[in-house]
Image 1: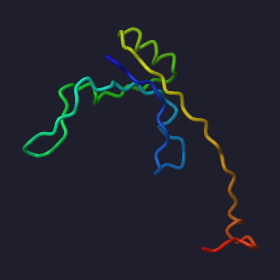
Image 2: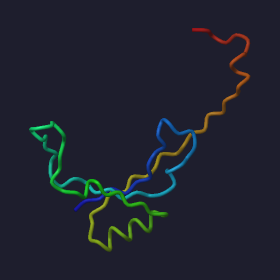
Image 3: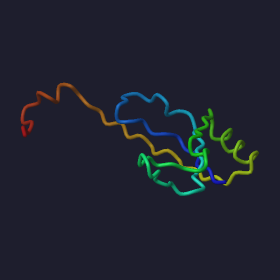
Image 4: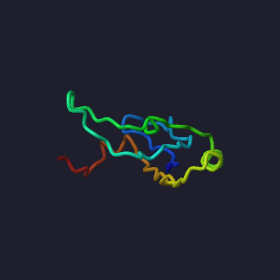
Length: 98
């Protein structure tokens, strides 16, 4: 069984860093998704795709994967680039109006 270890990015609806500090272990699907003929929903035979485990550190997540004999891949988080913004720039002289 394969697992993916990563830190989730913040969603577009967040301005803060909530739910982005913990490491997540997600299992890769073992079977392809199938379309249920009656309703058209997408279904999977394995339930591991619904499992998301959260850990405080990367070392804890790796230890869990090794303890359970999982092949894992680590995705390092991208570095945030803070862009300084100023409210006064909205009223700056020479600002291009569109």
